[in-house]
Structure formats: structure tokens, C-alpha cells
Amino acid sequence: MKKSVLFFAVCLFAASLVHAQSVTIISPNGGEDWAMGSTQFISWQFSEGACKPVKIILSRDGQLVCTIAEKVPCDKFGKGFFKWQVGYVSNPNPYVLEQPKECCQPGKGYRIEVKTIDFMLSDASDNPFKIS
Image 1 (cartoon, one colour):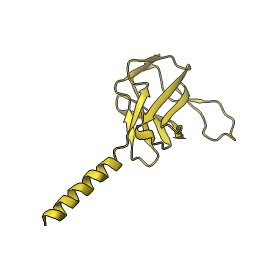
Image 2 (cartoon, one colour):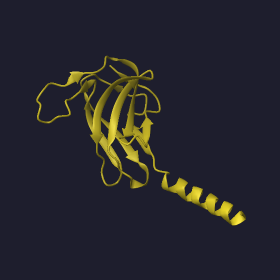
Image 3 (cartoon, helix red, strand yellow):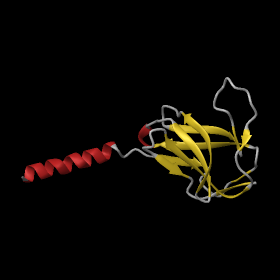
Image 4 (tube, one colour):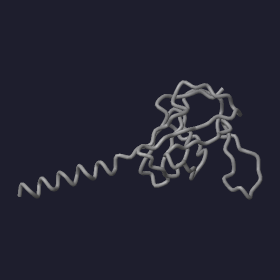
């Protein structure tokens, strides 16, 4: 009985190590003031060099504002970035030419969230940023 309990505990510990991957927002992480229409980089880092495509979401005061981009890849070192025209969303279909659409208004309380497309990992800006 004691051996099976010990084996179970070892298996749980090993499983926790396997699932210790995480993703962390680098920028914006709070306090920034980004001008509407300016070009800024949203960046994130996976732990342990893991890399999965992400969905980038903009929220304000805890409410979903818009999805900025989907299926954004990262490099072999687990670093990802997205060049964003602040306040706008582009059509994800490269075969359809249209102007970016405005998705928010200037103001405070914005945060960026990145989620892996399998929804297993996510992170959001630690503190709000401003769009002016």
C-alpha cells in the first residue's frame, strides 16, 4: 500500500513538472501610454522555450473589447511579438484588401491578453495601460 501511494505521489510530481509551461506578457504590461494609430509591439515569452500560436485580445476594465489577432506564431526560443496599429484590427485574410477597422476609443483601463489557441496557457498585462 505504501509503495503505491509513493508511486502515485511521484507520478503527480512528474506530471506537474511536465505541465509547468507558462506564457508571460512582456509589453504592454502596465503604465504605457500608446497613441491611437501609432505602431507598437505586443510581446510575450513562453517558459522553457515552448511555443504555441496565440490569440491576442484587448480588454478594458475587465470587458472584452476586440480580438486583435489570432494564430500568431512565436520563434524557436518561445518569444512572440505582434506589430499592432493601436486601436485598429486588420482583416486576417491576406486575399481581402480592406482598411483596418477601429476597435476601441482613447481611454484608460486597457489590458492585452494572450491565450494559446488550445486555451491551455494565458496571461494578461499586469496593470492597465492607456490609449490616447
